[in-house]
Image (cartoon, rainbow, N blue to C red; front, top):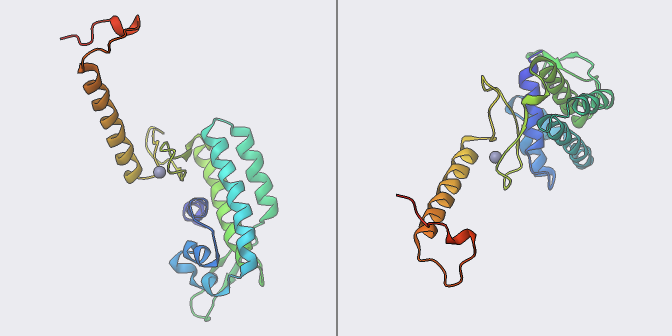
Length: 195
Ligand SMILES: [Zn+2]
Ligand SMILES: [Zn+2]
């Protein structure tokens, strides 16, 4: 089983909007097109519940709460057990499913996602479960950087955040050069600019 691909389905779910059934359908990867056809309204609530619990795992991991991340994943593994089975939707493309025949779409998707994230944690450690440092974003990610230093979910967030920080520094520099206010506090009486 490609646990890495399954782990990524967990990330995709946590980062997804789940307002309605169409949002949920958009979460399923291309190779699981059957899920789009079979998913039902009742699955939305199950996905939302699991989404919250999976987010907790990332929050525990990124906060250094390793034991809590493991406890939550073990509890999720109990709720969404893996039961491998060979399946073929039109009997010529045999492939693995991770739940038994007749299982709901939520059971199938979540068993795979939870399994993938659990193996990922054992392989790389919970410290590599990350929350985007841009607080307007809120996305989670799996840190695959060589030195475990990733802080953003995407290039987009990293760039946006760096641009904002750059502008803030520039603004601060401009303000430091403007004439001193009439009423000076002790701190403001220090020389406004050096060099
Ligand atoms: Zn299938
Ligand atoms: Zn982000």
